[in-house]
Length: 174
Image (cartoon, rainbow, N blue to C red):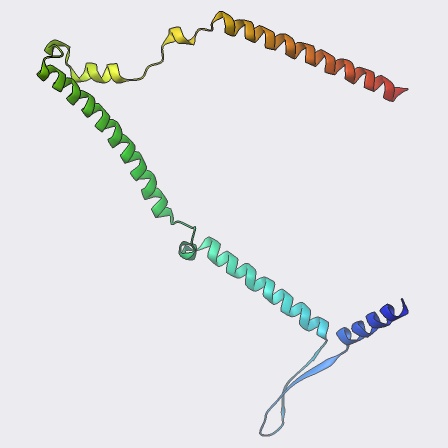
């Protein structure tokens, strides 16, 4: 233990020992600049300088257009263009489906599979539209029974939890 204490004192003594940094003119040996330092002061200044450089670099990269040169970052203009193109491609795909449905019905008329009076572009588009059927939304008897069963099980489990909680509270009060 004594050795550890001695080593710590030696290290502390070296860290806080005053040293002098002198800059001399080589020709005349005249002192240009002089500064008294300790190793701890040098370490603290170097650490703070490194932290400041890291923060400044991070700020410049994160909040300036330089971030576009880092892989993984996309420019705002590129994102906006990609969104617009995705919307256009979706609308073009829908228009293509509508035109294909119309052309298929025209082919049926030309082949004689369908009467001409039934072929109307608007009616074809309306028939192709996916509309939910209200009759499918009603619950069946089996679904209603299942719902009732689940509700009764939930009530039983909540009652059991309440009972367990009250008995636990009574035990803690004693």
